[in-house]
Image 1 (cartoon, rainbow over the protein chains, first blue to last red):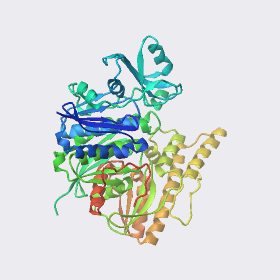
Image 2: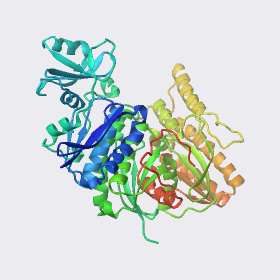
Image 3: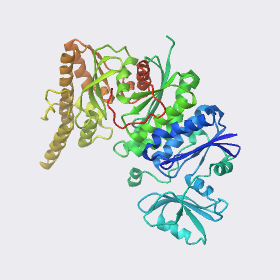
Image 4: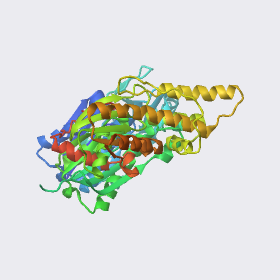
Length: 206
Length: 334
């Protein structure tokens, strides 16, 4: 079973093709502002390198947020159009859960993404990746109060924050993420949409 | 020559649209999902909200279009997409969708400039005749484009500040008409008399336009009347404004017809629906003995039909993009 994984929720492109728990090809690179331009061509190169055609994919797993609004939409659009037009099963995972799953430490996992103005996108998972605190757009000070209740945890992030935090850098463990998600229930491609966890400023002001 | 079916995708502003056009001239099926009612609440298009709706709508619109045409992706020969100009986040959705379809179905990807689309909306009605002058008027554009042949664009003039449609919407706000107010100003102008004196903008030797001065003049006039405790005569203000706005376009069009020996004038873009402009252009072209073509209303607003039509002629001109094609908020038509 060949699975395509796509995450464009930050300035990084994280993508992989995995077959039966074996990594066939992957990319992990910071493209900054150029992400929209290069995301698809880099994914195409992965197919070429592993000599498989788009029709060979059996399932797509795409990150639906939180993170960069524009970034999330790039990956979601590619994934849902791909899945819809070739009738391929598709499912979503949050960026935060992918971060937690990729951690190797036997402890509580706290993935966080800088959402600016003192806010973060954050969630709390136990050592077996079960949700303790659902992904939320939350003031860092508030999330810290939640963390005070926990003895030992690991902060995971690739961002910098106003307050200097002892974070573990995130690098996706594609095989592990996919092995956990490969049997997850699939979604109608039309319903595969970003979960921003935050309304737009215009909606907040209205 | 074998028939060519092009799937067009347009998402440059607040309409998500897909269309299939045969040989650049025959519309097979079109689907447009408009967000106008959503943005009404904000008095204009909110880019982030527009992008969020595009991503939600894109596959639904594509599916409905293929169903309407009773076709499959295998029946499509190429994908044409608006790459710019427009709202960058909005453009991206259509672009990523088009790139993905081109990849997974191994079809040529044709980049289409949004204005080229508006121009080629006319080829869905009748063949373009050259030399041609395209008068592109919309909420985001006011341009005069000279064409000597298919896909040979030469922009000879454009607005130096606001687009004409933008100016209409702002005047509508002064008069107290709800967004999008442009068409309402046009309608109201039929009821009034030209009693307010407004300056005719940019009467110079160029093919350029300027609408910010006219906009300010309307705002100031309304403000001054209010200060004096007088009520503005709304219909009269609409009539006076429309007369000046239309004249500033037709005077430059007249100059271009004379100097560029134009045979065919086409009007394209959302403001092509404006009655005042349609009438004035008709009178001018009749008087000068040139052919006028204004596409029907459904092709005036943003749609993917015109993108698929333009895509055919772009393809004939050898314009094919690879998957690194990126969206551009601004780009010169060439």
